[in-house]
Image 1 (cartoon, one colour):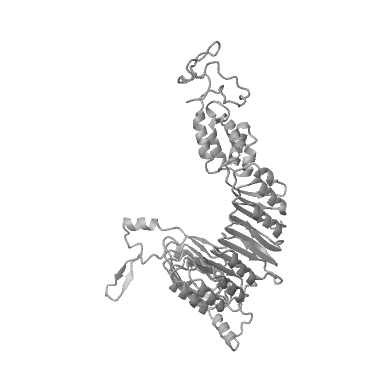
Image 2: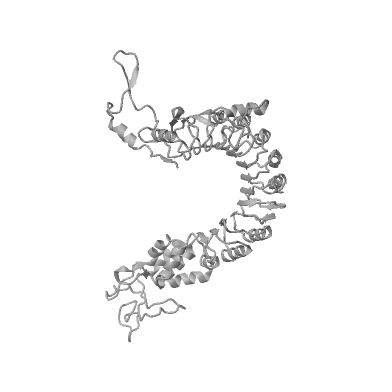
Length: 556
């Protein structure tokens, strides 16, 4: 039922600049000297002297409730303002060009925050629509320049629950106080710092922020150089990412529901953080921990033993990166304690092929991702063994692991010496070949493997391959049988190997099998393949070739 513009709800001020209608909104008779006896009588059709509204008042209220269903707003004043805004049901210049408010709001949702600010200056109707967009926003991703004020933007988004900021100026506790005051129901907070900016937030200030936000479940902050200690207490926090940490003197986590933690430490030799004590404390206070990532050059076997003694039963992902003092002894402790791992990242460690064999013997039914980049002591034999014994693998990263001896990540001397190191150096002095045949592998990274000159891949599900800086691959000893390959990265490779990659991954030469039928010679001595111009393809084969995925080769 269409609502007459002159009839306003009780307690609401009439619309300005509107004289209303001279006829009764119930019976349609002139209002002068008239009392309507039947207020529930049906409304007759309006006269055509003014344009009809696209939606009735009740329909638009329903639409507004549906739009705000995902954002529960508890403030009664906001609801009253929403009802007042509903009175203007069309936005535009009048006539046939008027657009319903709900449609206009949906259009404005596609704009960026800067574009929304410009749209609000067009007219009053657009400003009201922009106000609704800000109010109904659940997630905000914005880059804050030094001249802009983030507080004025956050005050508009009273239903915000997820916030991601990239700060181009210095950050201190004022930002945390502004976010805590403006967003009472914050659940996810991510703070990225530009290269020229400095994060001055201390551990005490971060601890107060986490303790005050009762609904905070995910916290990710970059460049935490001034956090001298970690004292976090929260019953709702489940994800914690902190990067560029340095010399943490005290660690106190009281987060019983923490599921994922990522601590990235600065690459400095003077870092005094006691990682072993930190691992023990995590085991006592975070029993539900499922994913753990630690990146530090001070990782060692003692830290891994402290992690295994914590006995985190729900642990599924272990990532210990850049720990050059992690050896096969640490692998033994990991495989004996955590037997259900799905991801294992020991990039930058000193494990050997023996450690890879231990991993394959324990995780054949669970491990899906194996990352062994920058591991100087592994060879192509260990990688082949992992691909053969781990049928569920979907990702293998062994970048900068199979390198020449004169590479900066290998031994400095190219001359073979006597003893165990001489044997290893002699082994790396020779080029190696890698043969992988896997049914489920989807991503393979061989970046910087300059020690490879032969490569044979038979992976039907592989869709991404990284050959960057593989400078010694030989085109005649290179074969790809990967029909679903979509992206190949070959920056820094020779022109001949790039040409071989293009030929083998193009739609005409994808190795999905032998498309060419064979035919015996006249003397019956041997079979030879029939060329394409002789072969007559059927319609089914033509359609099959059209469905082959297109592969992109990325190179310099």
